[in-house]
Length: 464
Ligand code: NAI
Image 1 (cartoon, rainbow, N blue to C red):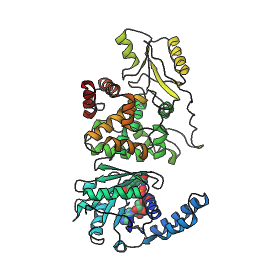
Image 2 (image 1 turned 180 degrees about the vertical axis):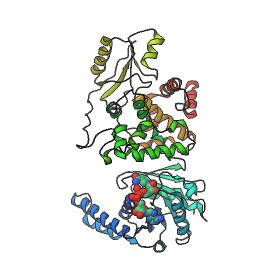
Image 3 (image 1 turned 60 degrees about the horizontal axis):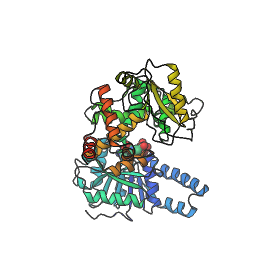
């Protein structure tokens, strides 16, 4: 099966829900005949009707011509039974996220489709290796992980399980490109690339909230200024705390309760209280009167001039720097790595109020909106970005993906303004490693341990 080509293949999509409908749409738009099946009677036909309305909308907006829309729709045939999928050369499964149900479906499919048909699963959290376990031909099962909404999100994670044949993964990779997507190869490990590397984006802010250093508004403003389209709190509110918490819990459990992925009591409270975010009307923010307006980021930006008393964070608190330098008036400020706007800073306890005001003025004079937060080690942006880089470095160390794939995945799967390895190049290995070291020293324990990949890169740089 090593030279599998799926161009022109009849594609079966199983599961006509949110993801399956989108997958059917893009496959049909790319010219494939699509058979759409769902266990629930009438669901596939309903999905096709919904798609017709979506395509009509695109035609009305001038984004699609009418002939293309009707040709796309004509290529999609609802199938009532899986026996009707026999001529499919590719099956993409997007049913309920349950290992046993998926195993059973693929076992049944083996008796229906041709021996050389490719079987793909859109699972976002289940091991591809585990889904393939009982198959007669496990080498033809591969993960094809799309992002929601499928027609708009460019990324596809092509997930190889232990027994997936490389040619099969390559065929899905090529097909994804033909469908207008940007694929990346990854291994079947918890969270694959995106859902794994993204954990610290939520976790660091949840830790800062838990320890009382910031408000949700402050964390969001700081990270928006670093270039993220949405701050972590507004993003968790959008995703839904129930969903986001469940992903964190599953990654945590799947990693044998590694403390790096530990879920947060702050989020647990929201979930327990039914404060899921936008969909329930309240999460970190109140949506009773629509979404709270995000403050626009200031457009000017400069560099904050560090002085003996105002220093760029290296992960130590202002108080620690004050104690170590025997100065009273000390402040630390955050990494300015984005388009600008808010810039977090913290002032040592015991510093004078006049000094604190001078610091705010210096930050404002450099074109930033001064954002005074509690004296948190690594402030907001620095610790979040350092931990994203650390997680990405571990993923590369463990062979989950290469650095280029990690960068592509984070930019296209969750719209990050830069990839983790791009940040690493921007900030420098020394600074990232130093910050992680300070966090590890401050908190103790496992959470902030430096990835061996980063430690090794740092050594190479020092000996070069
Ligand atoms: P959904 O609930 O919208 O749709 C699932 C559909 O599958 C339903 O219409 C259901 O009737 C059907 N179904 C359930 N069991 C079936 C079976 N045995 N045979 C045939 N049809 C069956 O779910 P959604 O969100 O589309 O997710 C589907 C898969 O895609 C899951 O594995 C999920 O983890 C994954 N995924 C979801 C993403 C999302 O943002 N919603 C993103 C990426 C992956």
